[in-house]
Image (cartoon, rainbow, N blue to C red; front, top):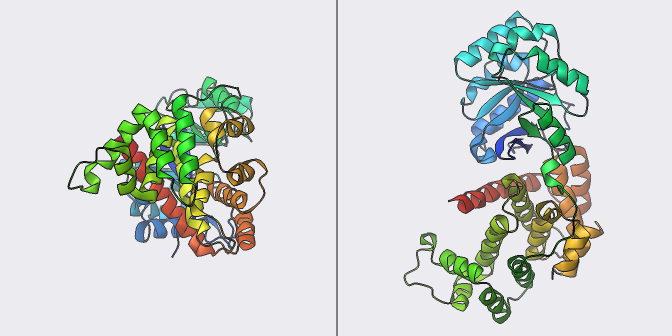
Length: 407
């Protein structure tokens, strides 16, 4: 069984990763809500418990998973540990004595409970002692309704408000002012502000290296000269090449020696790590993680497309698809300054062609927009099962890289 789910990050006020919500679908053909909530939840728990494993899909962060009254009653939350799941009670569940008893029992066993798409009703007051998080749909909830919720929970300071479907930094800042502590949406994947600025010498060097490694044949002389112009980057390359994970018998002491021994694939991985940590260290880690996921996904999927696509080019296109949000500058302005292959620039700006279609595909998966996903896959001649497998593998790879940059 394949794990048909997208994960959406939940961030705190400092834009640190707090958790993921797993958005489940029975399959790419069987688009939710064609199956009911009970079946969706049961399949999610089954897949996560017996196939992929939630921790592998969420990088050991908690997973928000929707539960109906029936699935809670059947004990599905307890098939997962208290550390790996936040029990999210669907908005369709009506408050009543049975639900209240189940909530008390789950909290006593150490589970964290959240109310999904909350619309205030006084009866929910009985549940507040057991609820840790209240999710509010930012698009469908007025400021007056939010203030009503805040007034209702004022005597329960343990409850955190989570703003869902936050799409811009303006909305994020407004939510903070209203007392929200957690945020879900893609505001972090858009430029915080559009401004013109010069790229640093280190950023220019990184761009040149990305360009050089996107070529079918590596030009070691050109790549070596770029590294030699940036002392910091050279030091990091030598440190990486001499890392214990490679179990070298002798020390690598020159740039050229490091490049030859690492090879194209490992060099590209190293540059991805440097991109993740150096382009803009002030940005949310989840934004960099998303760029890394897109890069690996595009690389993997490119291998299965009938039309000839260079996997290195596909990797870089995915990696740079969020560069405007990372640098807080318009995409057009950034691409004018970067010495990148023209096909990468075309894919990111015109949104036409196979590479652009790969970016569209991964964006649709991120949003769990499965019906449109199926259309794009059909046009590209891709297997549904392989695409899902590639997405899961890309997430695991990106999480691994993130851990390496933090160690």
